[in-house]
Length: 284
Image 1: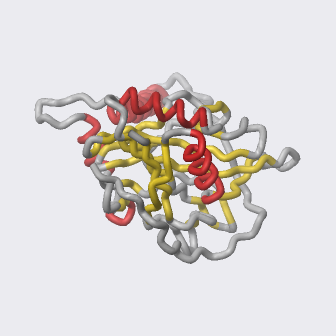
Image 2: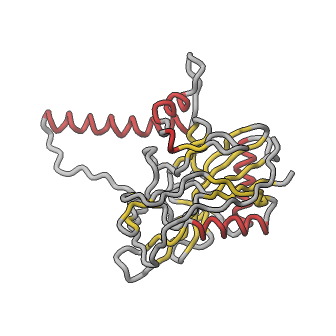
Image 3: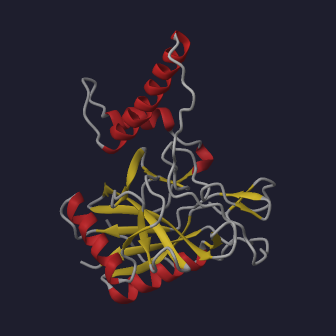
């Protein structure tokens, strides 16, 4: 596969933002069942609840652990067929497979920065990093190489960040790397202002392994009711790309317009994001 160098196109216009965003962060979800009576209807409700949770867990397990069926299609392929994004939620870059525009929540809906309300609108978390590894000989090697490169670039996997998200590449759901609970790649511990990101993959395509990522910057406001507040998608993307380019074999190879900057939408925003993903490629 020939991943040629791409010059950076002119980014789409983005409306100005103020410097006082608000972020509502929750590092874990707790389901409480209160006052369940030992009646027939209470017991039946509990059975329905348990079945729903089991179904959700099974779906997530099937997506990350594809198994072939008698029809030749994996459970992941069948699941994705039912969860396929709308046409305007995927993009087909010239040199890459089809890519979902957004990081996905554990329930496969577009991630919203844990309910962040930014200038009166819901934040949508865009894919803003794409990584190509033509060197690795297996998915595990590709993941290990990437984790090592992120660590060398000053972005190790750190605790204190929500996890369990998904990416979408070429009709397949891709799990978060690494799959460690409450971890994400970050340049500082979560108790400080930091850039952090989640990376998904790998997906084998034309002799290389493809990863996609969503990076953002947050600030810590100790005396505020909301301790972690959104700052920027562009700042985190650019800093991660700069450091991994300077300190590892993963080099900036160009920029791709993923058409995922949301402008002038009355309800949803991508903040300062310009719609451009940095394309990084490992040297052979």
